Image (cartoon, rainbow, N blue to C red):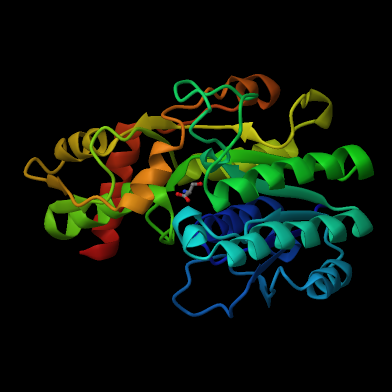
Length: 316
Ligand code: SER
């Protein structure tokens, strides 16, 4: 039986992934962890919860040893805009944190899931239908940590046999826990503001196309990838995956099918616009489809319908 540790469990992906893992493997087989104590308003799994700073290798080793962990979903990381504000901290958490996890995984023979990102690409990457294997010269510290992380995970697999696997996530949209400090966060904020005031001021320009994915698909992708027979995997770190390629106008049009008087206007944040402009417009996820049958369930309109319905219940 798998015994799972999730780091960054109180973050946007971690909180929902932890719940899905508890449902699938049993709450007794999942330990959630984060750098801070869980609060009563945190929407996450009901299971054992530890405070864990991923920059402390001894703390990680202690939990893995005591709890007999076999799989680590390592989600603790800074997102792109926050990372750009504090590159040193971003390196420390995103790289040294991952290195510590991999070292403990090597010692205790754990499998490791690590999210990479569309941020692992840069301005010289082909922007349309970005291939699985292509140029990766990102110009953000976030991207630098993601590419280095992909390489480090592949290295630990080849050199030490650690079962590392990863996904290049696009922007993740969900109605439960908010993302924090990402360039794609507008695609979540827009739904909150549509419900609250039928109006949204976007920090990215109209026409800025980026890949997005609805949370249930992001969770399914992580679990399916970690369950697939390793003999099928030609790639490991990390697979392109996407649910849709959209810009703010496309999301606004989809919202207007439900809220006809919804209005979008723009107040551009040059930092996040610069980051978005350096990322692909659309990913080719055929390697994931071939190697482990990846297929998203949500397109833009289906996601919009569910986001608006769930946020109405949550906010009104
Ligand atoms: N959602 C992330 C960000 O915007 C991309 O991986 O930083």
